[in-house]
Image 1: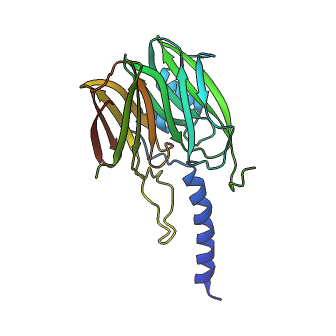
Image 2: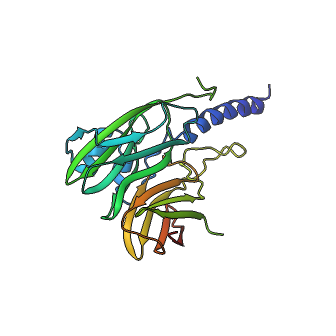
Image 3: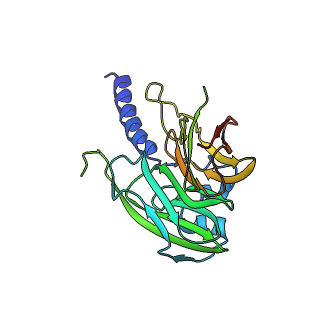
Length: 156
Length: 103
């Protein structure tokens, strides 16, 4: 039969599946690394990221870190997240999605005169904990929230 | 046209900055449906903001920041009329920056 057609079908299926996965930020190849903190951005687990960024320091769960994200995200490619904190002497805020292939999404360094507040939009591959790690006064504080990602987008 | 849109407003001593950047933010793992070739990674790695020449925020981004990124932050150290410069740099060496004035 015409194998060409079979091939076409196959590849279009594969492409579609891959496309959705990638659009949602599920897969990140090792070759892609950020200029700064390349190892942290390439790390495959939350522990790996912590080891690279904060030399394995322990982090305290704190109510002084607030994380605002939807309970259910219909589109994993655009999930709005807002992090704020009333902690003093903020040095940095890092945003992690534990079930993404590479959990570290972004890291923000704060200077004096900048409020501990950041709002952005991120990609999520699947339902996951979104974690904010705030470095203040040399210590790590954290808060997390589960965001359900519905694939298919019927609002389930 | 600039790839950046920025709005900075001062109210009761607090400046809220909202910015949108036009950028594809490709993860490098997506396939072009027509050619079934990989679309190469293309994403912003660094974003920084200065107020009157003083650095206020620096961000390192990975591929998991959404397409056409939105970023918002607040400053206590900048008032009306101050000059804000927002700039970004991506993994292919492209960059852009935009100067705006706090209202």
